[in-house]
Length: 211
Image 1 (cartoon, rainbow, N blue to C red):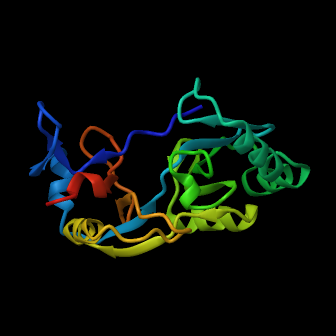
Image 2: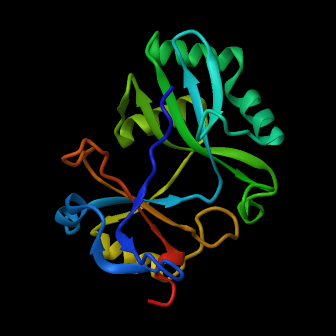
């Protein structure tokens, strides 16, 4: 099954010292070309990447890579939420024999700094792939509603500079008492660059701290 792609940063980094970001030196010319368009900004949750997979018959759980280990308490939560007779019926009714991956973040206590989000562990959805195609936000919302699970919130829509300005203020997370790690920005319409890579970027507070 497909692993979730790496989300690139906006700018190149220095190749020495603390590898600071070189503001204004764009990594991807397609992103630079689109920088003044309207992007959709969602909160980046500090957790561990989780894939919930449906192959048309069975439900599987995996981390970001096929070898990644899922923390026991989180795995127990995933089992109780997505590996039930009701969940299997939802997968069957929504997707039939299509291959589906629900991409999300396992987060909460004992996962990164997740205790500031919540005292237990949970799963929050941020992407859905059906037969190899990433789905629009409307479909992600439908899936979240069907499984009664959390979904990363849309913070606002705007240009990439507006995203940078927002993150530099180091706002509080929309969940719990944590400070926001950053945002994930994507065009309102799913796009790929000339190499066939998905156009999606992350803007993290630590990269702009002190700028």
